Length: 426
Image (cartoon, rainbow, N blue to C red):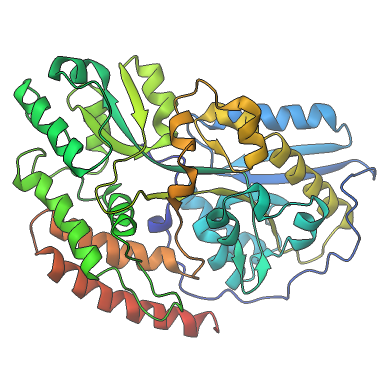
């Protein structure tokens, strides 16, 4: 699966609250620097794909500049990562510092796996002024900050430039009308199924994007219920199914096959994450990227973010804690280097430095204010994978009408959310 850089919210079932311990007291004042004795920090991350070498380069550079801090990286597939982390922290065998997806922060905070980092943000003078409001606010759970954003990564529209030229298409489509026109022209040029509508990954991310474009929300603001079965949701899912009904897509697109088909030149357009940029570039495919079209009434696109965090420690070592904070601070300040992985630096000041000039993701970054994130609800990953994703799959495959599929799964999602609130003690 080509999903190395996205939050695998659907991969992990975490509806129970882990016991054990209170949040650590890191009372030693953090000054922004570390001049203590030599320390070795265990750093957990999930960058197992093409983004891995870029992260390791940054880690190596950090150690060159900090001879009293050694970073021991432990890289684990994201799905395994989120399974292992709670147990490791509870057993006192967790990392000293780590990075995780934004949509996992609330769950890990509720399970007492990670600790607040408000003091770090304050010392570094980090605030919403240097980030988009969406990504900054999503790192807060119960009025405390648990993550420092490194990047944002969203869906993008990739298109085969040779196919577009053959079909006489000069500009990337930007709305529903121009998108359908492009598909029609591509078919006329001999590309019979130019855009594959996936029933699974990343079909649910497409659905969320379209739902937000229509003005809907997947969950109530007070976290009381699922609302993805709204009129806006039905309209979004109906559009996804229409791609099959109108012959632009095969009827049964297996997981990731839409990406493989695009990479092999079999299809003309695909929507996938910007983490695919380097893979597509290395493949030699003639392609370009653009923001996904506004099929609905307003531009919006699903996004996620990698956030640095501090895990709870059974016996906190102030030296390690402060060294870990220095590491996070340095990574945030040097997030422009991370752009080489295909990601978009979360900090506006870094983006404005020119690091994205001429990059494939540059046009995507220009629309960063259109990016939307899942709300910080504990256990939301399980809710997504067991309900919303199933509704999208059933409707795209024609097993159920969009309204029926969404209503059935929204009811189940609301029940799961109620169970999660009880489990997490909210």
